Length: 311
Image 1 (cartoon, rainbow, N blue to C red):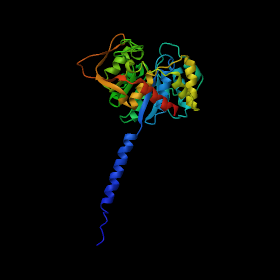
Image 2: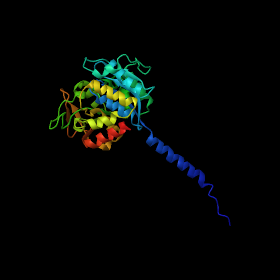
Image 3: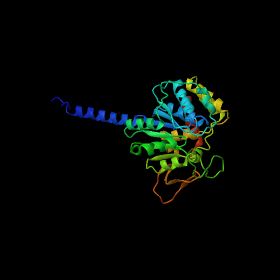
Image 4: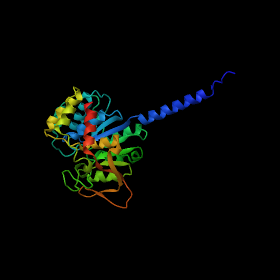
């Protein structure tokens, strides 16, 4: 007697394989990101943008700039994208603010590209979020002016944003060793906007000074990042020279790192209140409005960051 061929099971097996493949594809699909940045004065914004570009698990949809000479900041971001061969990523400037020193933008003086748009930052954010079907994450590494304007002008967008991941605030530690909580720049620069964001109901992941102040990129790690003969490595070295200080602190890349792998920090769900002077105060007993990173291992993050950019 010939063994029966389980022909009826083959279609089911095939369907199972297809279903597993689709689930795996959904899991591996890069996270769509809109980056809102005050790139220009400190080097860590450029390093954060570079980390996004070197992370296949992220898909950069657009870049918006905030604070000060936002047009000059947009040119800098657009040129970094251009030298890395990233075409089709729109960049636009937010409403200008008070002038401030932004030496790195000299590297992009006169730069133009089709990706530099005249569209407002808020409208570009809205467009990308609307097309993202609830998957878009806003990575905010500057004052929260643009993000608050988006939530105020288009209140329905808050239901379409997957999460806001931001660098900002200070819970128990400030900028320097043994320093206590302080008014961190990104939050304090626009207190009204910060309050709008933290009371919006949009899920927030917060990388405060507590997990960034000790992320110093020493000369040896800088050398590894600048050694590859790639246009992006050369560009980072050029803007670093214009920045003109010896040791960058990776404040803003930590926010990107939290998006890539939240487990790299100890986190707590907390209720964060913004004071008049821009401090971030924890209010016990109130419903959490943010997941706050409170502790990390600096050497591990520096090693991770260097590997990703050096390769």
